[in-house]
Each structure stands twice: as C-alpha cells, then as structure tokens.
Length: 201
Image (cartoon, rainbow, N blue to C red):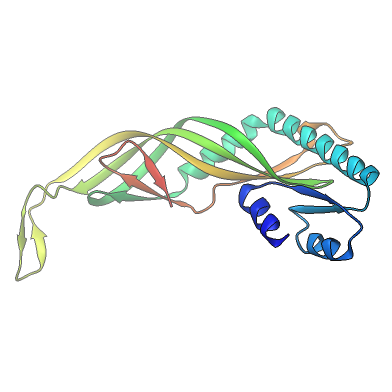
C-alpha cells in the first residue's frame, strides 16, 4: 500500500480503496490526498461522483477565468529575476507578448478548494547587455580583463514552464466568483544568450 501511495503521489493520481479492513483504513488516513478509503461500494460511488462533479466545476472555473490566469503569469514573469548565461551581463526590460496555458492537471480537489498544475508558454523579449569575451585582453598579474566591448541588444525568446493555480470556490456560486492564486514557483529565470529559450530555475 505504501508503494501504491508513492506511485499516486509521483503521478498525481488518486485511488479509491473499498474495504472494511482497519489496517487499510489507517494507511489511507495517512495518505488522504492519494488514497481514499470507502467501506462499501455505495459510499465509493457517492464519493467518486461527488469528486467528478467538483472536477467538472473546477474545469469550468479555469475556462471562465483563463484570462485572469494569463494576466497573472504575465505580471509575475515580467517582475521575475533573470540571470544571463553565456556572457557576464544583465537582463532588463522583459516584455511579454503572449501567454498560452495547456495541460491542466487536477492535483487536489475538496469541497471549496482545488489545486491545478498546468504548463505555461510565454513569448517575450528582453534587453541584454554584456561584456564581449571575444574582445579585450586578460591581465594575469591583475587577474582581470581590460578593454572589453560592451554589447547591448534585444533578444526574443519563448519559455515553457509549469505553474500551480490554487482555486477557492463555492459550487453554489457561478465560476466567475471563484478566487484564483497563480504561483510560478521560484522567481529566477536563466537566460541563455545563445539559445532560443529561458530556463526556469
């Protein structure tokens, strides 16, 4: 059972256990998000259908408030931290052109709360400036470079990364009334100067 619980946790799945075994109930009680214990078939069908109804309601929320999610991603991404890779320099003035979201995965659903993971695709541009390593020279005695040219340019990139959306709702109210919190995770992105992507770290 512990192996099953771990598999469910790793694969974001939920398993219903129909049994009257006290030991199995104890395992399920210790893993309430992945193993759902029911004493009989009737209880299982009731719980399963209720969860399916909640899942469908959450999907309607995501459809209704897709624009809210995209705007939150845009705002958080543009204010995130960025680290230039490939040269020693800076990344500034990141501007998002478009955001796409796909592959919503319902991780947790309860009577008034849900967590959904999904993939975000962000198309954006950024101004970068760096000291060109192909110019200047290195002084061994001073342990530093001299007379390096500074390069300034704008690069356009696309990034794909996972986000988490927390949803608070009341099924008695329409989906538009739900409250959403969008989390991009860590707030730094590596920017590879010579590759067509940002790397989320």
